[in-house]
Length: 82
Image 1 (spheres, rainbow, N blue to C red):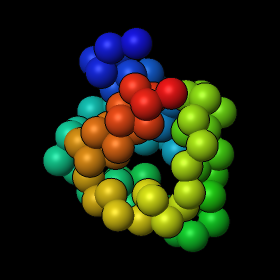
Image 2 (tube, rainbow, N blue to C red):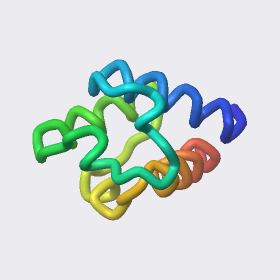
Image 3 (tube, one colour):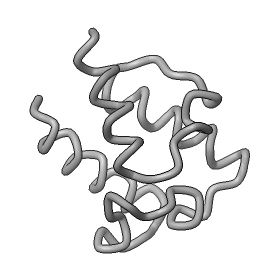
């Protein structure tokens, strides 16, 4: 999977799960604000990523990602390392 394919898949999944418009999910947008994340929905985000991308991550790993661009980089590193 290329990084562009991974990003497109992530945007589709996040927009559907968190009920936001795909246009709101831009690389520099703040993840927590855009997806309206609290601690419970962060757990949902971790589960969603693990299920759809077949990777294992910790919620604390995601706490360090502020923008979608950082999330994509983090996720692509994990996918590539498998």
